[in-house]
Length: 236
Image (cartoon, rainbow, N blue to C red; front, side, top):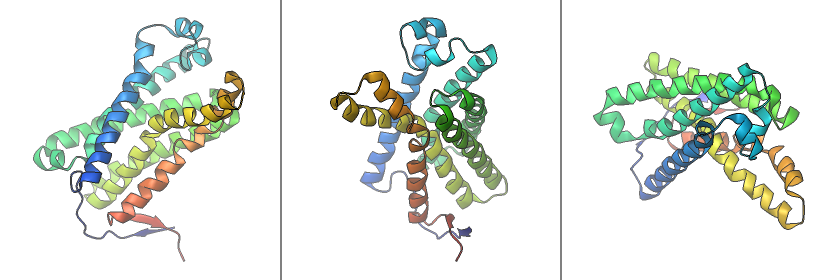
């Protein structure tokens, strides 16, 4: 695996109308999912939510306290990363308020670290079984590694590499959004075919541990190459 050197190209979240629309869509969906994911768990306890069949509460209501703490840490860390992350790619913020960009970046990476470590604790008890262990476990590891690489790159002053690693990292953060998009897309055909909801949900949830983040990374790498940033290529 080799790293392709960067080419000087324009990078702007507002360079083209399509780019602006895409960035705005990411902002809105990230904020919406952050609120959607957190709100139920700050309004009632896990046992109460489990009785009402809310989200994944049933899988964690009877778990040890350490698992429940990790569950809340994962949700809150992921939510903060989702909300803060898109604004790290806002060119005007970087140019006009660099101090805000730096501090919000620290908040983002701290939230990623919390969410990723908590996610690794939760992976062995995932509702998706072994697929969840390996899928969500790999997501947690890559989330940590790409965040660290982004931080290390900016500490040594390598801005292009920092931007590349941040794009990969946020692609993994955005898995929280894609998971909730893929689930209904896989549920609807099964329900239409007459499959019972519980069985259809189990089938769908067995796929999302990998499906929610692998395509994201592919798209991120394509965008990285398109912008002339340092990208990965297989060595000849």
